[in-house]
Length: 134
Image (cartoon, rainbow, N blue to C red; front, side, top):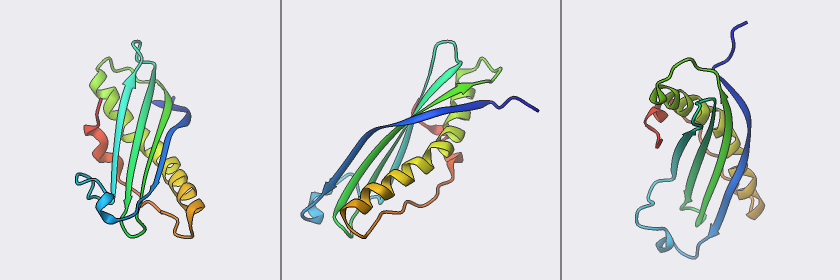
């Protein structure tokens, strides 16, 4: 059996910010999208461990809510490549794919505590995350 390239060690929710707004005008002018998802990949110097921070900002225009959730995942790396860019690209695609279900679950739970209109985030294609902030 082959050794996996990544070993997911766990995650932590580092920030949840839930805001109920009074009017549509309170949404910032730069945040016109329903969902903004970003990720940051950091490697240890020996390239044996990585932390991936996934940030999801959701604008619920219909219910006047803005929710931000940040999750940090910790991964062991078993890749022979010395090229940091290759390792970060692998982590960006696969790490975000592993962490996003936790973001979706947290968003659903937090938003359902306020009212019956729980926020259900769509699934995403993480292959676009090869151009992640690094």
